[in-house]
Image (cartoon, rainbow, N blue to C red; front, side):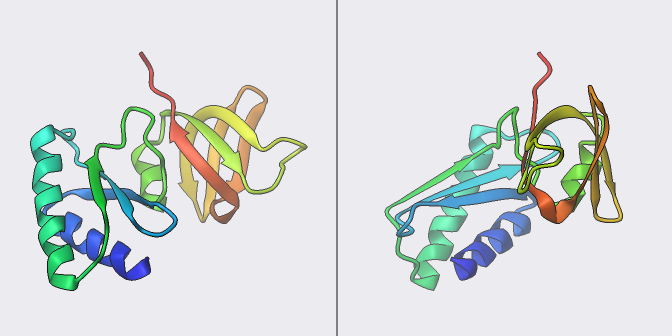
Length: 143
């Protein structure tokens, strides 16, 4: 899967988009690719990336049944250290790998990432979690 991920990342970034994440089914039959760009993703963007990936998969002999290309949505996951800087000030939902004070799920305002530590302003005060101890983070849309 790592080889497929690297190919997808190369194609997506080569087209000027950000690769948010890739999800695959257990046997690699379904590939879901989530892309983003500052101006927002359109159907045409998804079509462009899908067409390029399809060609790249043919050239590289990558076997799959279905490819889905999509925007990450309003509740976009934060996966890379740069995401934590870019979305500083946003409302987030964070899940840790291990409990912090008997709790693994937190909500609050993302303050950023400093020296490998994610900082979140929660109702109970400032939470600091090592980036490697973060299991999952998603934006909470403000509507």
